[in-house]
Length: 577
Image 1 (tube, rainbow, N blue to C red):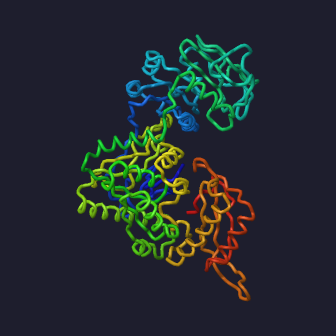
Image 2: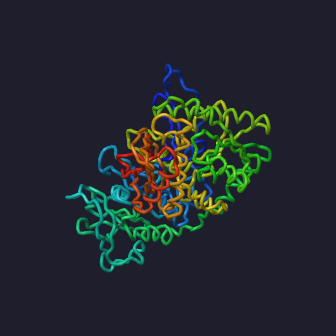
């Protein structure tokens, strides 16, 4: 899910697609070693913590061996209203032991357990599991790790198994893991190695035509292994298997609900900030910043100071709408900085997308710091910064990246220098995107705000290919407004991950009335996606496209041709710049 600000190791600050560019710094500012203007050392940036440090709440611990599906396991467990956290497979017993563990799940991974340098769970962790009698489920590589540790035999299969396979239960075998499932069911396989011999104390409970041991169990030590991936959508009954393990076998409580989460956070923040402390945060009107700002306001009222920067490249009437929604409807102490002329003046004549991002990113940080000083002069010192980290950001910093990769212990925060001496408050850092939406609904935020599409930090500046001028911004704002309105009217908005219009630096001939026109070409982009890492173009019905085209061309002066983008990601990106 890649809406984030990234100030990366290019020769300049740069923005990459983000939903709440001022606020939601996702995979943020990785240490820039040099700048374009002469290689001067960069200042220190505010550090972002990486572990959740949640030791009170019982949890399912997921040990990640580098599988692309690890975060999906976490999503599936959370969907059962059970709290879970993801750890690197190399986590120490000391770290894991701080938590109240109801179960451990070992994820899949790309390695072979018998190869030199392959990752393995520390002996101390196995001792901890045994001492506390914690149930374990190994998935794919995780099952092979169980076999490797407890004396089974793992070797390459004769053929790779990738795709759907029919799993057959062993006749007369009544495993609690498959309670309520038929004798045969479809599951998704993705492995080259397979189990050739069951480890000591385990028995086989299911197989496929290609592999005898696709599910094993040891009831005495409460351990189960699966060769298939129950967490992916291609395994229709996979959720039932996971629920049998998490809820029925491990007896995990299904008490992870957003209203409780909100109340716990409010109490926590009040204790942390104290009766007089101030918190500052930038908001954009996207779902993450809206939810976090409302949560902070519930906790400390007007001592939370929200800043909205209008960079002149927002959607039509966006600043006015955000002020109404957040300040008037949700009671957030919000100030709007009208910096349109400042941004557009700096963007004059600039056509390179990286330069545009650099100008907008750098100017935003300057303005935010100026506002922070004004707020401090009016209300006293601000010690805390509200930050929109989501759980996928945290996962990225702790998951297993392979023996050669060092595991990052922190990310840096939105380009704000450490000299601001702000401590972070990250209310959403335990949540996935769908949980943020759920939390928004629990806080009573209106549905339209909660389900808004992501919007890039640099705004329309990267949807206007070529030079950004006030005239071109106005043309694009009108076209974009019509397209979004038609998606709502036709009932397609909620089914689309992201939708927008791009104004191209291309003109084409057209006919209006009796005269010929020579005007701009615009393109509509609608994608469907669950994680924003991959996306497919949305199959919008022709009649909806027709209405959009006719309205845009008739109502927006300056556009005489409308196209529809039918490229998928990869190879194309969602945004055009």
